[in-house]
Amino acid sequence: MKRFITALAFFAALVAAWEFIYRAKVWSPVLVPSPRLVVLYLWDNTLNPGSAAQPNPNQWQLFLAVGVTLKRLLAGYVIGLAAGLPLGLVTARFRPVRDTLGVLSLGLQGLPSVCWVPLALLWFGQTEGAMLFVVVMGTLWSVVLATEAGVRNVNPIYVRAARTMGSRWLHIWLKVIMPASLPFIVSGMKQGWAFAWRSLMAAEIFVTILTGFGLGQLLHYGRELNAMDQVIGIMLIIVLIGLLADKILFSPWENFMHRRWGTAR
Image 1 (spheres, rainbow, N blue to C red):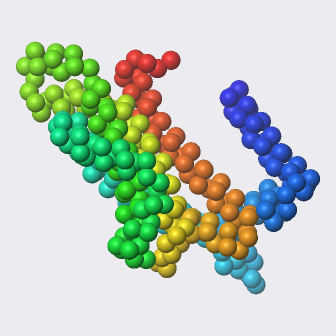
Image 2 (tube, rainbow, N blue to C red):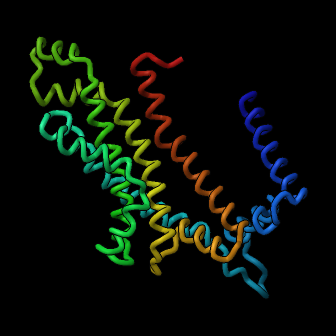
Image 3 (cartoon, rainbow, N blue to C red):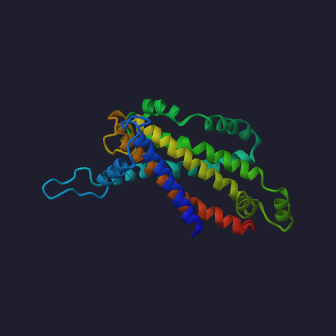
């Protein structure tokens, strides 16, 4: 309860500071809208049906945009995981692969996500394939490096003990190396998720696909129209989705590993 009250007081203070800046006119109201305008934008584009005489055409717009964005994100993220995990294992197992693919992965991980967008447009055009390619590239290299680092940091004593007890190659990999490297792999998956988000936002801002408008495209249109209430509202939704993903997808895994390895408080 104390943690909840502390968090509530902190965010209430942030909103109060925001309202104070708006009323003090530190910046133009066009650049810094009031919290009320942002809330109204979110309401009008989610649950406000309008009236019988004048129905609201924007109702459910944000829900539809969230659905489009999450579909793209999950598809690219799953493909990046499916390719990154085995590539990471191979990179850790064979020195020539580590000296080639490992170095390439390290270099490409530091490449900003937006750099993949021109290449995706040239190869795939204004299609969903361009979106998917950018998200996969944002996810893949983090997962490869995290998996490779996790396998290489497994204590050799575990492997020697397993061999002494008669364990063979496949059993060692499945029952010893993979469980011991899970903390690194989960950290890589979490980092890959963050990079996938950034990659997708860059792709949606620069790639216009008429089959579905995502959050990045709404963010871009808000900037074009100087609608800062829309820009800030979309940013808040992106932050909320990121927090929910962490609490639902990654925090349970991390808590399980802390309990499993006896490091939980």
